[in-house]
Length: 403
Image (cartoon, rainbow, N blue to C red; front, side, top):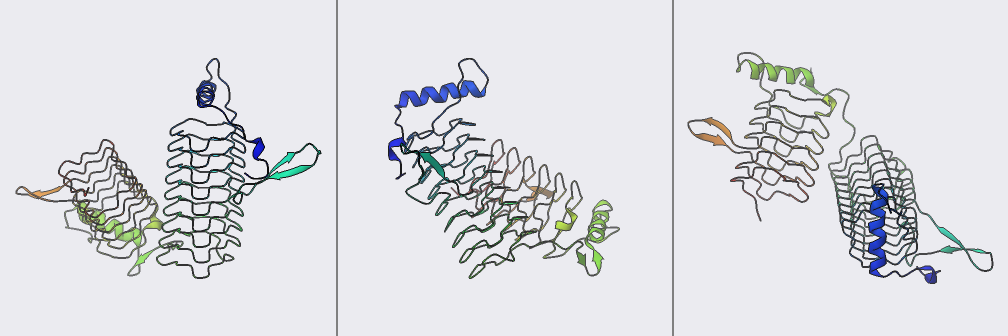
C-alpha cells in the first residue's frame, strides 16, 4: 500500500503464532480463546499453509506471496487486503469479505469462494487533520488480473465491477455469480460453469469460453468481441426426440431390451444426444448403451448400470456416477471434470472363458473428479488428465496410469 504505509504493523513470528493458537481456541469455544486481529499487519511471504483463520479480521493486511495453501478463511474479513501472488490453492474462503482485495497473480486453484464478495471496495482513513483519505494498493483494488482460479468454486460470488484481465477460470464454478460490469478481457473460462450467471455489460473481449456452460446466463449485453465460444453448452431443449420418439421412451425400450436379454425392446444406439432433459437417471439399466459424443452434464446417474457402454467423447462433467457400474465402458476422450465417481465400478467386465473388457479412459479429462473408494482395477488412464483427482481408497491394482 502506498497512501498509508506507516499504518502497517510488524509482528514477530511468536506473536503471530500465539494469535493463531488463541484464535483456534476461540473457534472451538475453549477457554483463553480470542478472535485473531491481523488488521493492517504485514504477513507477506509467511508460511500459513493449512491455518484456520475463519472469522479472523485481516482488514487491510499485507499478504503478498503468503503461503495459504489449504487455509480456512471462511467468513473472514479480508477487506482491502493485498494478496498479490499469494498461494491460496484449495483454500476455503466461503462467504469471506473480499471487497477491495488485490489478488493479482494469486493462485486460487480449487479454492472455495462460494458466496464471497469480490466487489471493489475502499478503506477511508481519518488523518490528523480530521480529513478522510483513501487507503490505496500499489495495484488496483478488487483486482484479479492474471490470477489462477482453475476449478475454483465461485458459485453465487459477488463480482460486480471486478477486474480479472487474463485470469484463468478454467473449470471454475461461476453459477449464479454476479459479474455485471466486470472486466474479463482475455480471461480463460474454458469449461467454466456460468449457469444462471449475470453478465450485464461484462467485458469479455478476447476471452476464451470453450466448452463453457452458459445455460440461463445473461450474456446478451456482454462485450463478446473476438470471444471463442466453440462447443459452448447452452440450455437443453425441454424434451429431446430421437426419430420422433421422446428420449424417455427410447431409454425405456433399451431397459426392456436389457431386462429380457434382447427378446423385447430395442438397444439404444445413438450419438450426440442431449440427456440433460432427463435430469434424474438414478439406477437406470443402461447396459451396453451406445451414446458417443452425447451430453450428460449434471445428470444424476447414481447407481446406474452402464456396463459396456460406449461413451466416447461424451460430456459427463459434474455428473453423479456414485456407485455406478461402468465395468468395461468405453470412455475414451470423455469429459468427466468434477464428476462424482465415489464407489463406482471401473474394473474389468468379465465376458466368459477368462476373457474380460477393460474400462477405457484413454485421453479422458477427469480434472477435479472424485474417485474415492472406486474399483478401478486394470482400468486404462493413458494420456488422461488426472489433475486434482481424488483417489483416496481406490483400488488401482493393474491400472494403466502414466507417471
